[in-house]
Image (cartoon, rainbow, N blue to C red; front, side, top):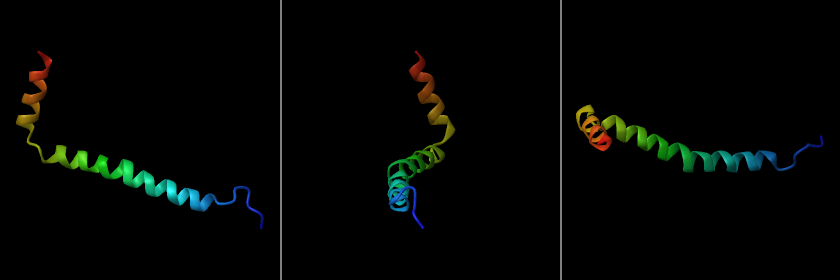
Length: 51
């Protein structure tokens, strides 16, 4: 069969790998870091920036 987009599976694979490496891993690290902070220090830090 003739594909409409030759090389599409390879390009899709590279796109998914780069998406995981560049976006999902740092984003999950941010969520894990924010989950480990206690709420007292984060609220005190954010209220100090308002003034």
